[in-house]
Amino acid sequence: MNNNKSKSSKSKLVYVEWEDAEFLQHGWAGIVEIKTAGIEPAIIRTAGWLLDKNKQYILVAGSIASGRENAEAASDVMKIPAGMVRHFKILKEF
Image (cartoon, rainbow, N blue to C red; front, side, top):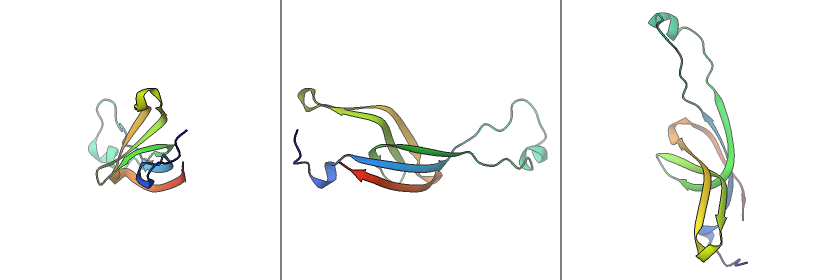
């Protein structure tokens, strides 16, 4: 196992708390009724491997892999718009 990774290439396990977009209405309803429904936002909590973080979004993968011919791969990737993020924390670096 190669432990000589540069600091920028370390795998980071992260926690992201974010507000999800929602579909509020199915079918027809009055606009005033829709606006005053008092719907609380859905708060989502995601933990995983940080692939990228920039001004537009955060990319978090459920699983990451490396090995064959030094190729890296990821699965179950979530792209979270930065404007929806309430809290971001690096839990651990590997």
